[in-house]
Image 1 (cartoon, helix red, strand yellow):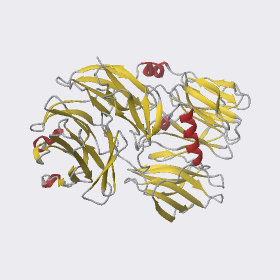
Image 2: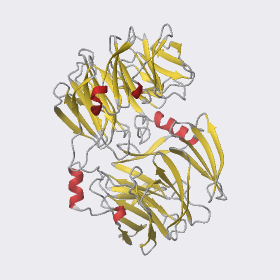
Image 3: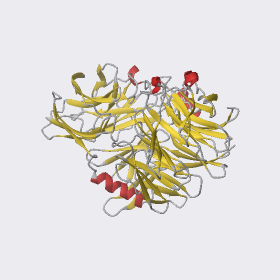
Image 4: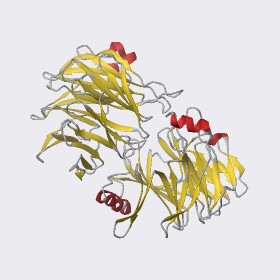
Length: 585
């Protein structure tokens, strides 16, 4: 899948067999005979694998109110929210944005039953409606729920087939997904992942009665893969916790007793997935999509000041407009690498050391004042200084001498976690962000100039900070770090001499919903700010007045933004794997 459509390749000797434009999603039947494709117009096409041609088109009549909301950009344009084949490939379920699930026999001209329930409906606060759908192995039960993993509001529904009678509705929870191998060998027990704050739990359900049999926690924030033993009595998980420590866990089923808990240096590489990624690169697709809920900035701009533009994606650098891609030359385990905005160097931490790799391939290493890895690093424009932090501890490091100065904060701010930092272009000032605190520092000699303590009601959690090159101001992006349902976000403009907030901008409401800022960029002349939000919006703001100048809407979430060197264009990296260039108003 790509944003343009579905590419269908020969597997053994990669060659394009066919291209299906305007596709949103696809699913393959268990016997590999059929391919179901949801189209952007709301149809579902069922293709024969052998003939590589469409066999059947499933259509649906959508309410005018739904069509109007999509055309007015109040809903994401996903008419089809989920598709699933039965285990014998004789029928399929299709979930639609109007909250209806239709069940079809393959080859028939009309659905044999339509399912509806309040827990599967589109709410006024929803911007889309996605389903998790699964047929039981005997095809006598359909399990369906809304994909709302960050809100305590989705419920599992169990339906008997073929009559479409509702068996049971679960309690409200954060049901996340069903693993690839979702059923135990008895065919009656279903595994479902559920969130509890930042952690994932395993639920076991009896699909015939719709009752929960057991639930146990994993201590993991993300599960990368699962393996179910052929006997069904053990489940192996690969994933990581909130500190991104990797684990292999083995659980006894159905009791949920933890049998093994092995910490790993990294998750074992999936050979098939690795080969598939190599195929994508060879065919010029790069990645089909970038970022996810847990890692929204998996692709980010690393150089827009000078052409060509470069984007970092996992361990690769993509160069535009020539489309070249090459390894980033960073260690596989590197996270939170800092890329100079002019593309002159990249910096990263390893336990006890700071490394700076310049354009010529030369690496400079400097000892750090702690032996563990760091949480974040920022390097000044001439590579004379680095700001490095771990948890709530913050250091200014002289790169040449390896001398370190530990920042001293007011006692009440000492426990607060570090979030971000930025140097001025002349290396004279450094601005740091802790949870609830902005601080301005003079670099040489190192001491605090001002902090925002007296104005803390405006501060928030500034996850990104930029200093103006020509004016004594800074800009920061503040987002909520509390409840996942708290969508508070704002742009703040600061006076650096006293850390005073001059103005702020909040995302405008769209109907009854308010998007949340996810990224921003400041123009090189300091006159404009561009923002991206999780509704797919791009907005331009006047830095001095705070006035919104223009806005654009995309179907996919912006991951990162950057102004071009002359300030006349804005490069936008979207989560659908595309890069757009917009003119500046």
